[in-house]
Length: 479
Image (cartoon, rainbow, N blue to C red):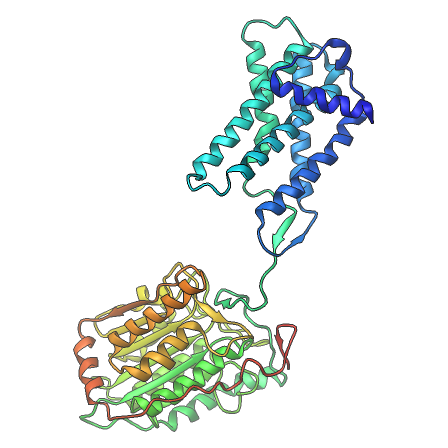
């Protein structure tokens, strides 16, 4: 034990430029292995300090410390060989690991001392790290001089510099695994980028799939045709992911809202992926949506009537909307696919609302003079509020339940919803989703006139079809 402490003292002395007598340079090779223990312990302490709040311990940080240990060993081997004393490589490694340990402790203590100071910035921490690196460089310079008193001009500086980079560079890795990782709060709202649900349909998937064309035909046949000379509203709501009730809640509420408050009673149709609604709604797929749009186009006056399409599901970073209903093999709905379906149906006047992560991609793809497009988020941002513990998403609450129950003019309703979403995200310290809008020049005056002509109607109360508190086990909805 005394010999190990002597090695530790000699190694830390290198940081002060204290050369080591040749008689003391011979350190047992086993010291290098024992000195890795305080290096690992220090890493665990430092990682825990920087991971504020509840956190769980994992041994993944050993990978980073193993890399650091190998780097120190390589630096020591380089110093010993360049000095012409390769047999002293293990001794040099034991001494050098002490120097790295000392520099790490010093930097950590400085950080603790200045952490609360108002002038501290990222540049401050970079300066501390560079200072630690210079101390390691001094240790390598001193160790080189201890190994070989007579170096050729300049070679000592080169060898010491390369060794210092080898020994200190692993501490710069921003992606190296740590020992502590923050615990996820159980009550944290889920983002729309969460993994799609996996709740499955329990009947015959083949029968369900082959029956969809007839089911869509029946649903379209129930729609009242447009009245000549009147701007009629046809409303379609699509819920894409069968794994979470929040999408069902939004679809069923949106259908009630537009039937009761936007004069679309008799002209609403839902497409929904949910195991409990297959007898009431056709499933949500690209083919059923195309069939619905074509059927509505045949029942409306395409020169005067209005289609409102509401989409609610998980969104992907490529802007496609997830359509998930296991075990059915459903493809996602991309913005370009939706644009093509609308164009092929020949529907001229369109309002499209995309409530999903990264749904700004729909705004970019669908924007044109005859279309109003609203999205829950920017094309590169997530939206919040889905998950098995949620009744309705942040955007669904803000636009459907709050804004459209107060204001039936679209730009004004969107402004109310965006402000509400922004305030909620700021209060909960989330990155702003930044809902988007594109109001076509041709449809703008028509929407203004249509909103003004709507008959008086009361607000529609939001009652979730499946309350979030119902039968929740281990954060999963009961079957």
